[in-house]
Length: 616
Image 1 (tube, rainbow, N blue to C red):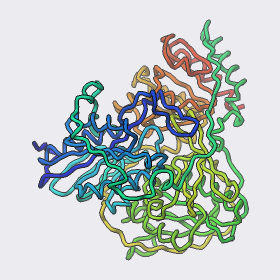
Image 2: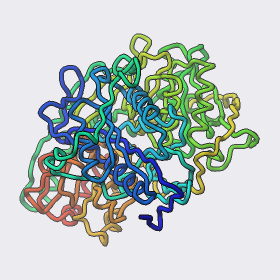
Image 3: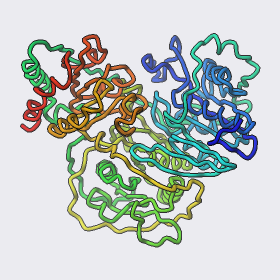
Image 4: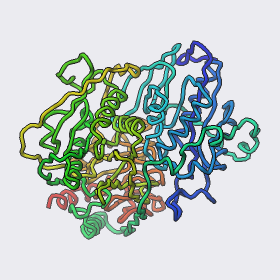
């Protein structure tokens, strides 16, 4: 039965991709550096639940069908079972020991082979990312392998005939866009109420005949799994952060004095107190001299991300020095002035027929797949040593498409870069910041998307503007962006040294006072999901397993309970201070110093002291 937002012209064959992951709190790695599944509570990835629910709604409105596809060990069939119990028509379970150890590209290749084998499909829906790895790479890599248009982070969807009208949620901006079927979409958290059947007994009651297992016998000889993965996990270590856990008592003024003393002892007021995972945050770094050697380190320049672009160029310049190479800035917003940030050459991507002048917003007619085509052409001719990209919706899609085309290893959301024995090593956090893994690429071209705020901002290089060469690409016009609206700048939060985390215990009427207090200590505000759900802060300020992970020198939690979904994403902060009137609030298990009090009373005494300490 059709709804006003869903008016398809014909029955549609819809496919939802679903990944099985452990319950987040129980995630851990085994000695082989792989996710431990035995004995763990396993469930469907949170974002994939939206894809299943939206796919079912579209299938029913069109009179078509919804199938669910998952890749994983035998236990992953529960994902298909839950989706079928929810209303899906069939499940496909790609499973074989040969798929073990698949990285994102090997996963995308296996899924692409399955889709080719089972298809065609009119619409494929995926989660925006999986909350265990948080790379967001598989959907755009799959789109590249299947030659499909792709839209990331769908928040609202309308279907009229063969055309999809979409509102996309990208970091700190909103895109009104449209594309035509067939297509692949990734789903944002608030797109639709999720598929969720909690009772495993209901899953067990699903007829096994509705789930088809697919092995390498059907998909071909491969290679598959680890043998097809251009990235591998090297050394891995658990990030153990000792928290002081000191609960304060007595007059509030005395508590504030004690809190400042504890924070000072922990180095919260100096750059040395910054956590290792954000060692570049807020720090200026010196650029090495420009390079001219043959190996190139490419940097994707995202429009309107000046600081993040400069951080990437500075990191690339240090890598280029280590290998005797040079840095090339690439993208529709690449300009000669980037030489001051570390670029030795600039390749500006322009749409055929547009001319040399870059559009005011840096995007023009070029969608991510068009930029990826141009960068892929450049890379095939140049064979760069590495390509770096911002870990944003834009950077992830461009880099993922390029990696899929080139067969290049891509590490997502890196927090550190280095060169060992001539190879790129990208440090990556996993499982809510509990572990750090060193990821290495075996491919000739090595790639990484890099989180904002971790490489440091380079001091400008005194050098003339570098030459600009244009790369022309013909836009395919499959994803058509009608309007872009930015409601925040997520780089501000990523680079903040002091952050105040706000929960629903803070009345919206007090936000004006809270913002004034934050300005006094140079702090940025972030929020829990419940706060952004009601629109009290933009989605770009959400911190948690379906939001951002941050690592400021000082994190101050007020009015929030401290549930795992939020606190796991701030645990790498240098110091954590919590204020809550409930002495049993879980946040006190995560903090260095805690006030059992009303945050307004505490801030009356605390803010002037913090202001003085941070200024000294």
